[in-house]
Length: 126
Ligand SMILES: [Zn+2]
Ligand SMILES: [Zn+2]
Image (cartoon, rainbow, N blue to C red; front, side, top):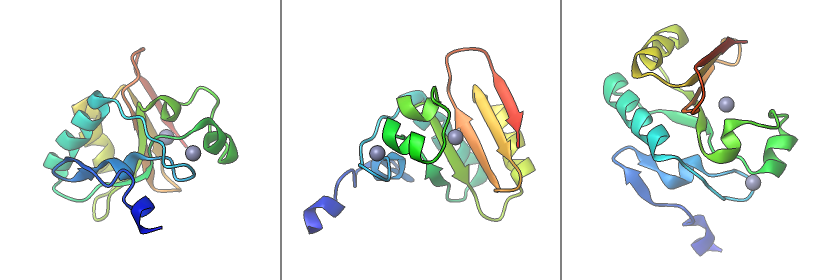
C-alpha cells in the first residue's frame, strides 16, 4: 500500500527524516532530541550525508540482530552511522569534539556507534 510507504516520511531537520531513525522491522521510532541535535551539529561540520545504518530498535529486532539487552538503541538514544569520503578515524575525532556520551569504533565494519547516554562516557573499539 502506497500510503504505508509514507510512514515517518517527515523532515525533522534540514538533512534528516524521521524514517531514517525507525526500526526496520516495524517502523516504530523513538528519538531523543539531544541525539538529533548532535547529529545536526555533525552534519554541519562534515558537510556530507550521514547514513544511519541503525537507529531505534524494537526489542524483537534488537534480539534478532544480536544487540545487547540494555542497548541505547532500544530507548532512542543511539544510532550507528556511516559517512562516505571521510576516514572513520577523522569521523571519530569530530564526534569526540561534539561530545557524544558513548562512541563505539567498528573498524572492520566501518561504522561508528554514537549515543547520548545519561551516565558517564563510554568508549570502545571492535
Ligand atoms: Zn521493529
Ligand atoms: Zn549502535
